[in-house]
Image 1 (cartoon, rainbow, N blue to C red):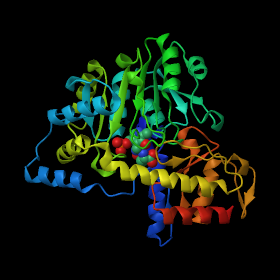
Image 2: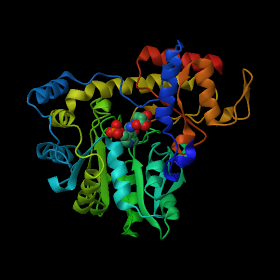
Image 3: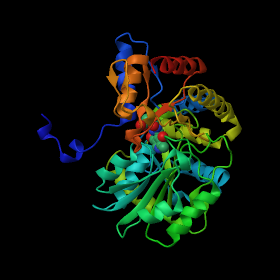
Length: 394
Ligand code: PMP
Ligand code: GLU
């Protein structure tokens, strides 16, 4: 049947995070007691003040097509947020609202990349970057990092990865999946290298900016020389638990924003009107309103690190943000556990699913085949139970 499909889709990988979540759902449907730690999705409800704004928007009949690039007052709220939280000045003509940060990223790839353009991805990287880049004709160039450098790319590694075909570099900080947070010094180091290569643009995915346990999020666009060549991506899925409401946005050079609007106008039009109205309220609220979620994630991170640290063979960095741990479990490769040979991280994740009823995601999907990703966006009880099951089957 697949021979009627395009090469484009046949060559694309299925999103491993969503696939694992679907598998967990399916097994649950068959009556299995699966604990899902595969999906990066806050387990909190959307705060009431945001829900109230959405209800109000319905009553006020925000039911028509919205402007392709977002309501002007939402873009103003985004502009204010960039200034307040990131010290970045983006005018309304530099901002585009989309159906999730995922769409923002896909827009950028489609408007910036020509066939064969190389995009540097410090690995591990967020699961969809590589296929989004490939879909647009780009060539992902993975720069492997390891637990020894806290999964961060060094300036020397960046320099070595640059070729005459390099068009962009994409990264997230706090990082999904490693939880690593680049310091200002580290970003300055990368910016120094980029200064020598003025044609390289940066996508800075800051969707986890608030879920940062060391404090002091730094945007690379704020570093000298970087503003005109950075597209800052953000959204409300993580900070406000609004995953299903699908709002993301960018701030960047006006010509990029204009191109994204043009592209989006032929694809999806403006993002959901009700969710956009609610996002104004979310972004205008002080960060203190969501501090309870950040504190809770911090507590859970410590819990999970403590419990996983007791399992022999798990090698862990200390994630300083987001809500994932990314243990190196390569010490299990080549071993046979309960009759199952573990050759790689995918086998390991499958083994945990089948024997411990715990869903995680293979690190291979994030460009690091020695690790698995465990999301701790789950209750303390679920986390304790999941890790005790993992321990038991190892
Ligand atoms: N970037 C990163 C690093 C993410 O973890 C996610 C979560 N799915 C996204 C982008 C996309 O977020 P959304 O489309 O829900 O705004
Ligand atoms: N960002 C989340 C994750 O990495 C959500 C799933 C997705 O959009 O891929 O699990």
